[in-house]
Image: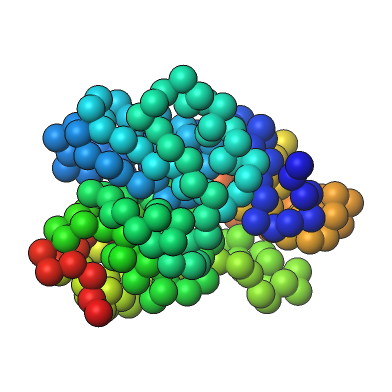
Length: 258
Ligand SMILES: C[S@@+](CC[C@H](N)C(=O)[O-])C[C@H]1O[C@@H](n2cnc3c(N)ncnc32)[C@H](O)[C@@H]1O
């Protein structure tokens, strides 16, 4: 049973009707993986599994581990892949070491899309990822980066909300974190993208269930709905401007840093 006041939980049904921008970016990230087709790949923050499905097209003889911290999201992914023996499921928190949840096993690659900005401590996050990878293993990431949804943050501040749940990291600090964790071949960049909405209702639905989800959960439907409308009204256009942090990295052949 999903707890509606738990900010780790997502409305998986609503997410599946709104996921087009995340799926497009996620599919681009999967395309950046170098795969033979028989590897084991961890999808870190798989959500309902839309991007995992694209990953599985690249793994005809391989295995995907679909990991998520939201039970509702993971249940939706479990249902989607019920008949696919190539997928296993893991309810785990990326803020914690992954060696326990993975039972000490290591994966050939990790892909993560639209997730890492929800994790507070990126130093620890990259250490946990390195600890879960085989030496020379790949990491491919898309997540919100420095400058992401700046107009939404401006609107939130103007409405008195100075705290937010996201970590929007830049290139230099991410490169330093990767190297400290043991990655030695790194390509990190910030890439602008824009999602345009056809109606105020579409924009407000997206803000409610994706971008401002934790605010709405904490404030409740009435006050949360008012916040969503106020933020939407303050945006300069009916669009969300993203700045994505894109990472392609390889763990050193010696493995994770001690
Ligand atoms: C916006 S969704 C992205 C889902 C999917 N990767 C996609 O691109 O559609 C973010 C996902 O990250 C998960 N997530 C956020 N923080 C997490 C954490 N600390 N540990 C595990 N999963 C987390 C959420 O539960 C959610 O399913």
